[in-house]
Amino acid sequence: MNEDKVEMLADLIRDSQNIVVFTGAGVSTESGVPDFRSPGGIWDRFDPNEMTFQKFVSSRQSRRKYWELFHVCWKEFQGIEPNQAHRAIAELEKRGKLSAVITQNVEELHQKAGNSAKKVLELHGTIWQVRCLDCQAPYPWEEIFNLLEEGEEINNCSQCGGFLKPATIAFGQQLPVHTLEEAQKRSCSCDLFISIGSSLVVYPAAFLPQMAKESGASLAIVNREPTPFDAIADLVIHARAGESMKTAVELAR
Image (tube, rainbow, N blue to C red):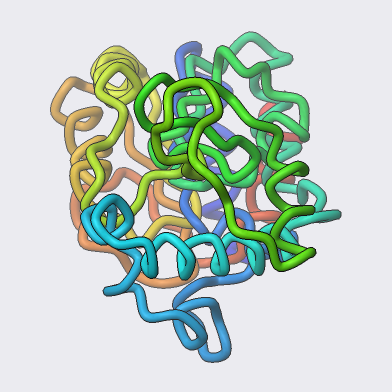
């Protein structure tokens, strides 16, 4: 951990009153959330090209593979707890400094750490909900999980006959318009934008730090690897998110 840079982040936090935090997979890997793209990860076991939204709605076999994927995800994600970074972000809300958490993650660790649901904008949805694609009727994920455990087929919606699907955004599926618009609004009105654990290469989400910077906000990036936006950031910390955020928020008191 670069102590000087963490102190600089603490100064930015201390001087800001309207902070947006943007999080990617790197903020949750320290909690044990599997990295889909790492060796041995989910995409070594499932072909992401077979997990598109278009194939889900057009092929019964693809839907079976999709449910098989989420059966694995539910098994691996259960029992995962927030880490120091999640708790530090929740502390920013307690201090009245946080405008929003915009996240690409789907495991709800921000809420579990103490962020209020109204502050968390989930660009890619949540793994812990199942909904009908047509009427949006909710179904308990545990009910679907138990059916998969028993080797049962997942039937269509009992209310309208539409396809049931986990409430995450599949490849090729449109991001939730209202959530994206709200994320853009918050990014353009914040005074500090902190990107944590994101490679900043997945669009349109990756436009958000640039929008914040162009609107006059300071931009801080905390990520173990370089990102395409390092050159325009006011501060870049190449380190683990947990210790860096915990220390910065503590120093910012």
